Image 1 (cartoon, rainbow, N blue to C red):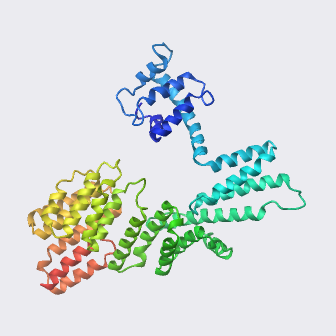
Image 2: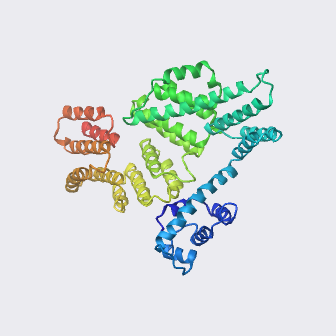
Image 3: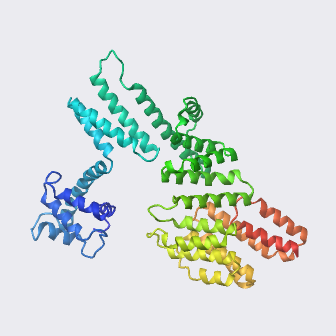
Length: 479
């Protein structure tokens, strides 16, 4: 029963929402079946975690029916009531939405009075709805959608009450609202598709994008910064260059107080994905990415519900260390180690790994090994990070035999897990093994051959720990 869809649904509600839900289920307006009410009463005993040994079909049956003998088996009987309760909860969700977004409630009421020809009630409702729309804090898709719904409802009302010869049906306002909503929705869709295409093979029809962009430009829709920000994002994704990159970045900075945090987070992700295409010089690229991370931290938009993803913790740590911002990274880890998403099972591992990266960057290789020896990871990506870091430590400390053994075991690990790990990860880690082994063997090469190895590594577009590998080859060249 704990794994049922009903329990999953109930688990998404806060304690306060569960109390409101219980009141709705108990109300004869929403529910007139005692079995549903009793099931909800039973489930509330285990709220909000819904994880208890007594949360079973047998115990639920007794609470609902007592010792009543029914024809079907107990689990089947409870499942039928659970299905009815699930449907009722979904109806109650609509009520929650109307409470949370009063604009919906006002427009629904206006629509009802319009159908009933009770027109005298509508103007006040439309005025209240317009006031609420104007108070929406961000110029985002939510704002433009509700502006459109409001103007459509207003047009419907005016169409009923006005003299048909006057043609004052709110058409201009409705058309403007429609254009705005269409523009921002289409821009967001094109941006999302362009971003996916830049990361992976993805089939999408862009044939109408160019005339769409020309229409937006000609219609001056970009005068509204909420639409302009997405227009600039699409321009950058479609034609990556520093001018378009800076234009989007500067507009985000200019209007950051008026943009929805999730929108800013998405726009920054587009900047980060385009950066390597623009800044081909590795040092410049790392500098730009580091600045993007710092800006997002200052804006507080990296956190979702107060938590930080483990991938971001690792990536920010690595980029900060490549900039040799040791003190900054150490402070960042201290402030964010406890902000990893609680549901992430390997949160301790990712913190240990980040600390290991920090110690390695500082040249404390033995302490780095101490950190990664504490890892208990099952995550294959983390395991690859750990093996690369261990190999680099063995190289630095000159642990020749363990180094050779780990080279072989790492290769075997990649072969054994090739069906579970994305192909791109397999390939770049094989490249890393190949080049760290060549660097280790470079003592036997001439200065000219070492220079060729340096140039070869330099030309590899994606290579983990590339800067470290190049630094080790440079050390060989100076000998």
